[in-house]
Image (cartoon, rainbow, N blue to C red):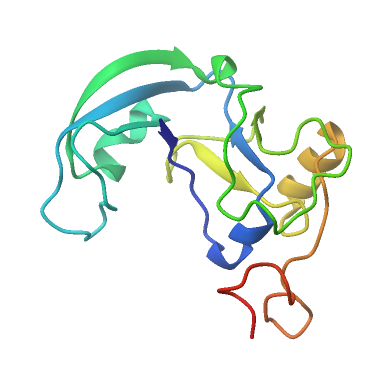
Length: 157
């Protein structure tokens, strides 16, 4: 399944090292039964694909016809690992928590997906959570606003 994460800072995605969820938020795994006709606010999806997001935000986020396969509290997601979008951008080092789902009381269902992309060097909540649980902390964007050379071949230059 894909976990749908929210960010207001897409340039920090190469620095992603965790996904934060609200431990008491209700999440759902949904299966796409009919994909939306366009990308406008919906993202791409295939019939049969499964996704995880906060139940309260389904109608706000998804334009696909979906069926709920499973419902559970965020605490059940905590500790699960995921495949990062840019696997070689940040060295794991000796972190045992990198690229796992983490519990964060500040995650809400006010907007987004109920899952927050976490890049330690790019936000106070991200930094505090990262230091608390031992996430790797690396800059992927330089002081000039460009991606650091070597982060990803498609982002160099």
